[in-house]
Length: 121
Image 1: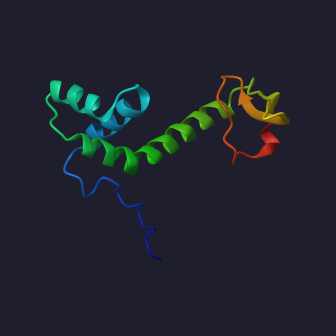
Image 2 (image 1 turned 30 degrees about the vertical axis):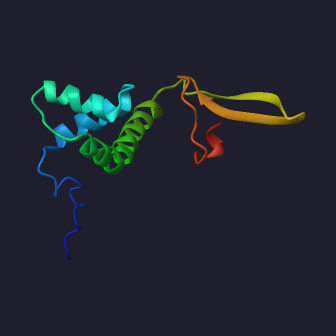
């Protein structure tokens, strides 16, 4: 029986360590910093890279890191007994026409993504 293939390492073609890449992406995403601000902060810590590298890593690894964080958060919260959702609703008048807007929000204030199953709401 053939061995199942391991998923390819997404960092295999990069010369920087995965820890540095994760630090760079999380600094840019977590804090309100520009690409050049992240570049300067890392330079002060002895890591010399270009702001274009920060942009490339953010575009390439940002969605992967976000999916990991979201998956871990949901798996931790599944065992939480008080997992609750509520719907924020509002009517807004735009150009004289009434519009109904809504969103699903969990007990921590996180907005439910539109692709989430409606059964959880």
